[in-house]
Length: 388
Image 1 (cartoon, rainbow, N blue to C red):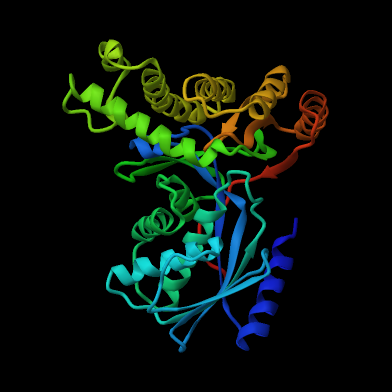
Image 2 (tube, helix red, strand yellow):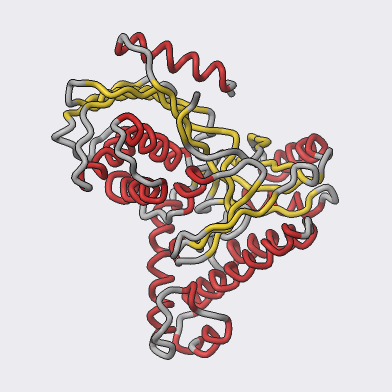
């Protein structure tokens, strides 16, 4: 995986080759989520952090009324008239077209943009490279044309771009973490109000290790939207007795038990997981304030059990990785991270024990599953912005 300096040099060189001018540089990081999974689109709480793997963008406005875009990692060029923006077959281009369209919807008219981008966020690992691309490009347009849009609004625009042009009805966590990340901290985000609060994650205590299955089962995208629909059905049932409940964020365990007989078991299980996951986020924040990674880790294992048995978005590869982590005294906690059906697990490894754990998980996973995995060590980082 290329380091920062190599990526930047490559992007600058390619930009100058294509467009004959030196660019401005921007970055937006990927994200992890320590706890609070699938709660974001239920108006709940999440606990993400930006990481030291990012999308980097070389950007400069042009006078041609065109988007001229180049994906360095894909080695592909794409061009479109700024006044004829539409969804296209080139999937990566849709993220950038979608972001540009959001500025136009606000009555702001960016002229042409030249952009070459690339990065070191592992694709398919659930680290939100798409959100990073959207947020970095939004920050670049905002800066290039001096629009002065606040960061929170840029986040909403990036999210709408993903909804309308990529066809993924994502929550707002990924874009928020990529924009507001802070080195050395995780953030507790209220996905309804967008109020947020930082909590320290001391690198003296634990290392963050991601174990990437490098598999993505075909259920991933379709089941995501099904889960959203199931949660909505649960809310409607709860509302029949408790009309003030607007989302699962507003429900508590007692309310859910009151309407249990009115629900299919499947819907009950989905709601039970989300309601208790919000409670776990609150407990996890209290644990972080005490540097109590033992309690934090137990909550992570509870989350994984809920995702696997109640929300049913795990798979044998993810469950195997968590089972391996449970057997190791060097792990504070582990769980699957992201939408599910593949991707990676996040593991809090006791300081100084990462290499030992990596060796163990490689050996045990190969023995059980019969294939290899990719392992990444990550640290928290600051959010999106212009590079000096």
